[in-house]
Length: 292
Image (spheres, one colour):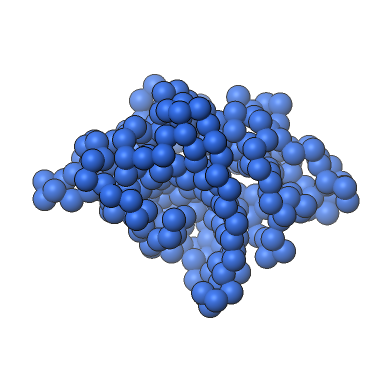
């Protein structure tokens, strides 16, 4: 998203809710076995607590999430604001609500969660499977997304791979976009590829769906409700872990004069499973059996 359209240790850290930078511990291993890296169900079992303290304004630990991109960049036509009274976040019955609304001055505000901060602290994996179960907000002008970014200090931004698992534009109710970017300090070197994923009309706002991506040395493979929908060769610049972000932005160049106030994105869970590089021929792509 930009302004444009280790075995047992990992499992223990997840259980104790200690946020750290996690990568595959033996990336040259031939194993295809998944390891849980982040199992975030927004409930008592996986969040530090049911209150919104699981999201901080800018620092990982003890919070699992931060409320801004680690590099400090907002995007879209709504300002991402901190958690707290009147903020954009609510956790209830195992669901995270991210709400975009107009404040007293008539300006739009909304929310973003990132599993990393500017120091490079956070939770992610280089290879593995990332999945979120979400229900889109209805109405034109909404721009929710589930995406992955480089888990390293924010000032190290050259040659960074970004994977947009889902970008949904509210005025197009029969599709969403998946994108692979490689960002460089020199804009002339940037490259990317996107794919339009067709869905039944209004299906993404009427019910929850799972949006997943399998990242391996060979390919980045996208899934909708466990079914493969698109793939792209893995860029050679992917030499670091990736961490998840979820947000409800507005606009992306599309008008927001008819966007419902408020608009809410519902997030049931965000799951991250790590895996080693696997054999030379690659591992079978797809969600692990334990993914719900």
